[in-house]
Image (cartoon, rainbow, N blue to C red; front, side, top):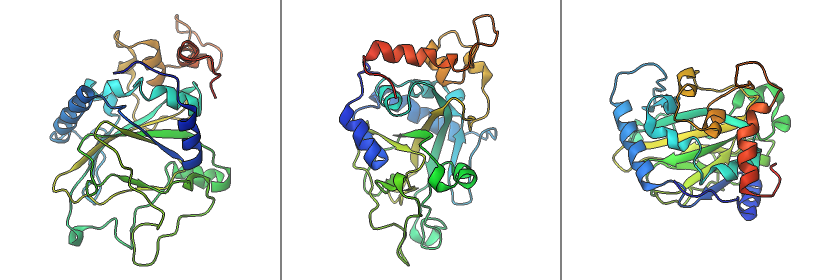
Length: 282
């Protein structure tokens, strides 16, 4: 989609400070259009495997990179991958690829994003439950691709900048649905938003009259279990390169299938990084 460039140190610093970052122009038009068409096709089916629905009207699928080739270019997006490695290092893979459709609902029909259920949360809540919030590090980063046009009433994901360093919950005033320091990112149709597992966020209010479509690509360390169902057929595809194979879950193995040293499966991204920049990976 674009020639990869070494990450901007100022952008890495901004992410470390805010727990989120906007990458401008990182979502190519053709890729976005194809992904949007594939999303509409998938949602119109009666497929149950991987379906992710809720009583609040949300619809979607887990593991969409295995469901339609239109989503595969998002796996190793060269406009995003350098920043991910700059923040996490090369020993990463895709934890989840989640298609989300949020309906446009009038206020009287909402059961979430109301004062009693404001919807603000951190990702990987089971990790916090097991380790405690004080001991939960940055483990994963999501890349939010919005397939429908953004805008003030489009239901974009909202964030509380800097909340990734807080050890207590965010505070939502009585009778309100958002904390006072919440923001809606000011993005265009070809921008993407990166945020980490500890950053507090919530879906905005969709009032545009049609569904809001997004794909959330989550990347984390290879020693973390993937959220999506296994898709071993993906790794058998001859059109994947070694970087894509690593991100899609290739294990520490030699060409003959024998077990290789621990961490050797991250060599494709480590080598890719060395060709990109002389700066050491995180």
